[in-house]
Length: 502
Image 1 (spheres, rainbow, N blue to C red):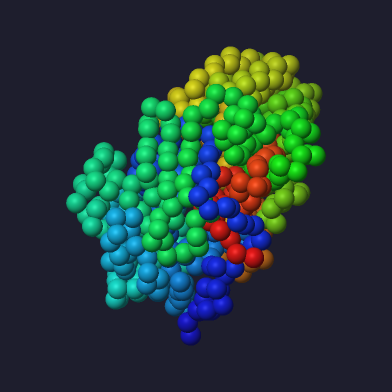
Image 2: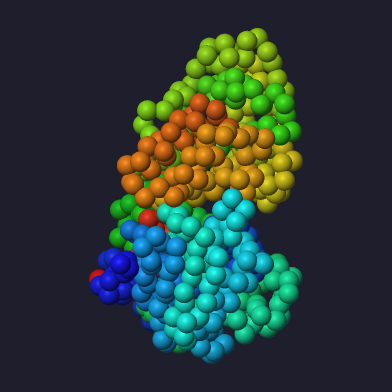
């Protein structure tokens, strides 16, 4: 017996939500910045880089407020054990250079990604590529074989950006390629201009797009100095505003405010690989008890944030375990755990006002229990690179990935993640793999709850606080901004740039 996505689900593709319509010939302008060449191999790993690439490139499935929806694949079905999927493609999809998009492109994409992984995506788990085989059955039908059932595999292959075979089959090193078709996708907008030095991009609506109409004639990311001033002068059309600026927009009918938890969290990373003292769980727990996380919410976020769960899963998620240790500030408990010992570490942060302020407050809290933290601030890219390479002792960073399926824990703590340096737990590794393959929802939830207990008991990372985003925009210019079920940065979500029918 096959499991089939009903035709009614396909109809959702043109019936999302309630948001909507921009006037014709509109150009949306947003804050710029160089986030790399917007193709799957050369964009930066953070949200803006991912988003600008995804607007140009389509995938088999897309994401709305509730979950995965049909996209390039108008329907799909699987065998009983969830290891073979058959996708039926739309018949009127084209590449930006006018070539038709076919099943051969899809099959080629997954063969090419096996050799050349994209910057972003969950196409390997535990070091294993998750597509055993992909083949075109005809011009519009692709059969994909997966190595085993996994709760996340459909979403992972569904969100992979499809490549034009006629361009990439000639490219041996996609990370160095800068030739013809370097950013040719099949998405609703095509690349018109890119200025790496200025961090400026211009996309224009793709006139042969198969799907919902682009909400603007063009989208531009432009360099600005003061983003708030640029917004108020009309140079950009959307900002994530500091909470103390909201009163100036609340009673003005020209502006709309959207508020949502960012699904990001500031966190204190501890390099147990490079610093032997941090391998002692008592030292890590002492750091957690020493920190005034409520104070960070008030001082850094001016109250527009929430203390993060030490189990990594956000408190608003249905997967959150409410019983784990919360680590409310307790300097006396921190000193007991340290047992009279004192330590000195370096603390790396970015050079944003929020990052440097948070780091200085963390320094003060740690000093009160006998831990000296020498703060060093650098550009965000330098800090991010240090996080990947392990060139730090303590590191303060704010990043996301906390929405949707709880398998996002595996993305940080799984075998190939590599961001938590020098820590592992055999029980947790086993649970991470087991929950992914567990079909019984209650059993899986119990596993996810236990994973959170382990994280709270072991403190491999001190979770600090997650910001609440306050997006402000001119609804008369564009009123289609939306939050995905797993990502709340409205300007990062592809559907925000399309006309969504009521």
